[in-house]
Image 1 (cartoon, helix red, strand yellow):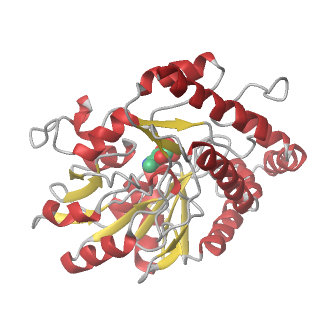
Image 2: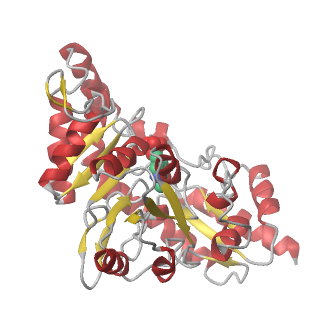
Length: 381
Ligand SMILES: *Cc1c(COP(=O)(O)O)cnc(C)c1O
């Protein structure tokens, strides 16, 4: 563990770039020389390659993952006052879009083992105003879509899968199967640089098997415009740049290898922490593969923040996703919700810690990371 342990990053995008520099540089240069910066052939090719990869009929590229969620909800025709169910333990984008559209976010607690929306909490959250459920496949593993889809069908609700952290994961339930994001009415994703399939700026996409919804989403992403300068509906301006599409085409070809590399690092962490009573390693749901956007431990009986500080001293970055549940965020304060309403989410926010996870982690780095975590725990005893 000496010079081999070069500076450990939470996500090492430079090392990944260096592994394919010539190809990326050429692809970017080609776009620059083509002048087809917006909606060029690279965007169309990426779209059809992603459709083939996901096994989905339509991919609609857009500007980022938050826009993808917004366009999906607009394409479904959700109206102010409609209620949309989302997990309380997630990144803020989901609730943000619901609130911006004048919809009412209704939160449900997380399953404490998989971190995903707990389907057992769904029915109690449904009212006559409920129109949609937005499960988030958090940290790289699918929520229980069989149960979510059953409840959605029973109550006639749309399902929008937020797949920003789980692109490439395989859902393999008893009733439904396919790539993450292809089971509900819409799947949405983000190509933010640190995501499993990330570009070199902002990017996103929606996917659907429904022709009509795809058509709506395409118009909405393009100013609600079907025929040039004729606007049939209110839309937004949300495009994926050609340069980003060119980068994404190259990285899509490597996505399976990237997800395999993440799994290899996760397996190293799993075995290193297998007999550490103070840590729970990530649970693997039987209905999904895991693409480890994050490797997240739950701590027990130790000071999580002190562990994080200790790791920082040792040159090991670690992050807390997410320290504040949605219902306790200032912007989303809501008289309907109080501290204590989502006990699993609140407990996870206080106890989780995510370790470095990316495609370029070396064994030396993994050894230093796991050694440092265990050393901290030993020092507590
Ligand atoms: C990253 C992320 C988003 C938002 O994607 P952007 O491209 O940053 O807008 C939405 N949902 C989840 C779960 C995310 O992790």
